[in-house]
Image (cartoon, rainbow, N blue to C red; front, side, top):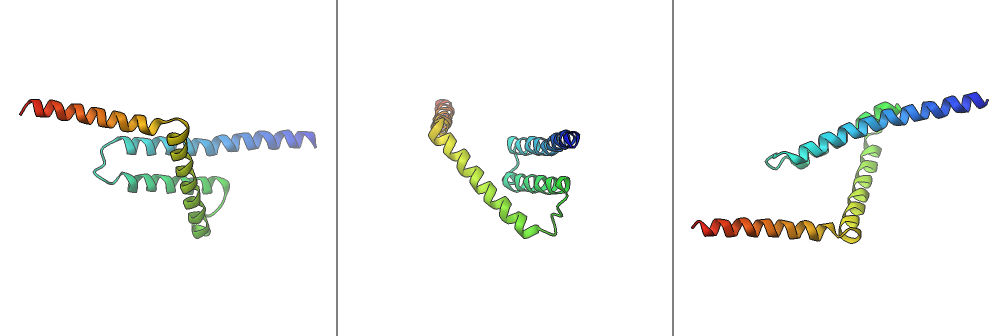
Length: 120
Protein backbone atom coordinates (compact mmCIF):
# COMPACT_ATOMS: atom_id res chain seq x y z
CA UNK A 1 0.00 0.00 0.00
CA UNK A 2 2.77 2.41 0.94
CA UNK A 3 4.61 1.61 -2.29
CA UNK A 4 1.47 2.46 -4.27
CA UNK A 5 1.29 5.89 -2.63
CA UNK A 6 4.95 6.56 -3.42
CA UNK A 7 4.45 5.45 -7.03
CA UNK A 8 1.36 7.66 -7.34
CA UNK A 9 3.25 10.61 -5.90
CA UNK A 10 6.10 10.18 -8.40
CA UNK A 11 3.61 9.72 -11.25
CA UNK A 12 1.90 12.96 -10.23
CA UNK A 13 5.26 14.76 -10.13
CA UNK A 14 6.17 13.59 -13.63
CA UNK A 15 2.68 14.44 -14.87
CA UNK A 16 2.90 17.94 -13.36
CA UNK A 17 6.31 18.46 -14.98
CA UNK A 18 4.95 17.33 -18.33
CA UNK A 19 1.99 19.73 -18.12
CA UNK A 20 4.26 22.52 -16.88
CA UNK A 21 6.49 22.04 -19.94
CA UNK A 22 3.43 22.73 -22.10
CA UNK A 23 2.68 25.88 -20.11
CA UNK A 24 6.30 27.09 -20.24
CA UNK A 25 6.67 26.56 -23.97
CA UNK A 26 3.40 28.35 -24.73
CA UNK A 27 4.29 31.19 -22.37
CA UNK A 28 7.58 31.60 -24.22
CA UNK A 29 5.81 31.66 -27.59
CA UNK A 30 3.24 34.13 -26.27
CA UNK A 31 5.90 36.47 -24.95
CA UNK A 32 7.88 36.24 -28.20
CA UNK A 33 4.77 37.05 -30.21
CA UNK A 34 4.09 40.09 -28.05
CA UNK A 35 7.74 41.19 -28.32
CA UNK A 36 7.93 41.34 -32.10
CA UNK A 37 6.18 43.89 -34.32
CA UNK A 38 2.92 42.32 -35.45
CA UNK A 39 1.04 45.18 -37.10
CA UNK A 40 -1.95 44.92 -34.81
CA UNK A 41 -2.33 41.14 -34.90
CA UNK A 42 -0.59 40.57 -31.56
CA UNK A 43 -3.76 40.03 -29.57
CA UNK A 44 -5.12 37.57 -32.14
CA UNK A 45 -1.85 35.62 -32.24
CA UNK A 46 -1.64 35.70 -28.44
CA UNK A 47 -5.18 34.28 -28.18
CA UNK A 48 -4.33 31.53 -30.66
CA UNK A 49 -1.28 30.50 -28.63
CA UNK A 50 -3.28 30.74 -25.37
CA UNK A 51 -6.11 28.52 -26.61
CA UNK A 52 -3.64 26.09 -28.16
CA UNK A 53 -2.05 25.84 -24.71
CA UNK A 54 -5.46 25.08 -23.17
CA UNK A 55 -6.05 22.44 -25.83
CA UNK A 56 -2.63 20.87 -25.22
CA UNK A 57 -3.29 20.78 -21.47
CA UNK A 58 -6.61 19.05 -22.10
CA UNK A 59 -4.80 16.47 -24.25
CA UNK A 60 -2.29 15.85 -21.45
CA UNK A 61 -5.01 15.31 -18.84
CA UNK A 62 -7.16 13.22 -21.16
CA UNK A 63 -10.09 15.60 -21.62
CA UNK A 64 -11.51 16.10 -25.09
CA UNK A 65 -11.33 19.81 -25.87
CA UNK A 66 -14.03 19.60 -28.53
CA UNK A 67 -16.46 17.60 -26.36
CA UNK A 68 -16.27 20.15 -23.54
CA UNK A 69 -15.68 23.20 -25.75
CA UNK A 70 -18.21 25.62 -24.21
CA UNK A 71 -17.37 24.68 -20.62
CA UNK A 72 -13.66 25.10 -21.31
CA UNK A 73 -14.22 28.42 -23.08
CA UNK A 74 -16.17 29.64 -20.04
CA UNK A 75 -13.44 28.50 -17.68
CA UNK A 76 -10.74 30.01 -19.89
CA UNK A 77 -12.48 33.37 -20.11
CA UNK A 78 -13.07 33.51 -16.36
CA UNK A 79 -9.46 32.53 -15.65
CA UNK A 80 -8.10 35.13 -18.07
CA UNK A 81 -10.26 37.89 -16.62
CA UNK A 82 -9.21 36.93 -13.09
CA UNK A 83 -5.52 36.73 -14.01
CA UNK A 84 -5.66 40.04 -15.89
CA UNK A 85 -7.36 41.68 -12.91
CA UNK A 86 -4.84 40.26 -10.43
CA UNK A 87 -1.85 41.25 -12.56
CA UNK A 88 -3.25 44.73 -13.18
CA UNK A 89 -3.98 45.11 -9.47
CA UNK A 90 -0.49 43.92 -8.55
CA UNK A 91 1.26 46.19 -11.02
CA UNK A 92 -0.76 49.29 -10.19
CA UNK A 93 -1.28 48.90 -6.48
CA UNK A 94 1.38 46.72 -4.99
CA UNK A 95 4.47 47.41 -7.05
CA UNK A 96 3.71 50.85 -8.48
CA UNK A 97 5.12 49.71 -11.82
CA UNK A 98 2.42 51.12 -14.04
CA UNK A 99 3.20 54.72 -13.09
CA UNK A 100 6.89 54.00 -13.63
CA UNK A 101 6.21 52.52 -17.08
CA UNK A 102 4.03 55.50 -17.94
CA UNK A 103 6.72 57.89 -16.71
CA UNK A 104 9.35 56.16 -18.85
CA UNK A 105 7.03 56.20 -21.85
CA UNK A 106 6.38 59.92 -21.51
CA UNK A 107 10.03 60.63 -20.77
CA UNK A 108 11.39 58.83 -23.83
CA UNK A 109 8.55 60.08 -26.01
CA UNK A 110 9.21 63.66 -24.91
CA UNK A 111 12.95 63.28 -25.36
CA UNK A 112 12.53 61.91 -28.88
CA UNK A 113 10.08 64.68 -29.72
CA UNK A 114 12.50 67.36 -28.46
CA UNK A 115 15.31 65.87 -30.55
CA UNK A 116 13.03 65.85 -33.60
CA UNK A 117 12.00 69.46 -33.04
CA UNK A 118 15.65 70.51 -32.73
CA UNK A 119 16.31 69.22 -36.24
CA UNK A 120 13.50 71.33 -37.76
